Image (cartoon, rainbow, N blue to C red; front, side, top):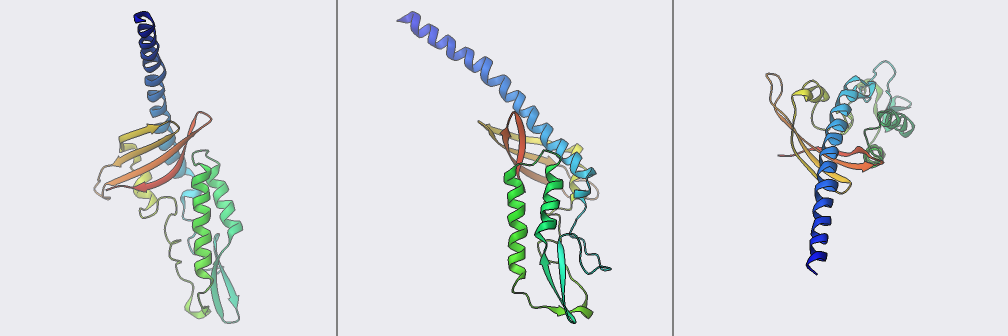
Length: 202
């Protein structure tokens, strides 16, 4: 009996030492790589530029379309253009389908909210659409505040449970920007970590 217990404890110890610890270290490296590489990629991509920026010469831009009704204009969201934008975001292979679907639903929700909006005089010009007057990936922070300083960021905490992870990424204050406390959730798919969510913590 003692021999069986000793064998069981030895097997358990080996599985913890050999199976768990290296995997945790390996996963932490993979998570950090996904986040920092994404920020670098996003900085370089055209997707980093706010595609919702108003083009006054055409009365519309990539995602926001301005329907002309006689002397009036009415905004709507072009979901075909949204899909093009989402496809550009998927090219880097850093964002999960969950992240992409959430962005799709975000734009669809704004489109629905714009339906009851009354047309306005064309002479008054076009205006910013609430929710699309910011970078939809980073939300309340200007992307420049993040990707200009992410290299000075510190991974404060990485919590991993099976194929899910929650990460706190802290970017310290600079002479230009306040500090930023980013929160990421990720999912591991086919040995590769993908970002499900980007938010902020207090």
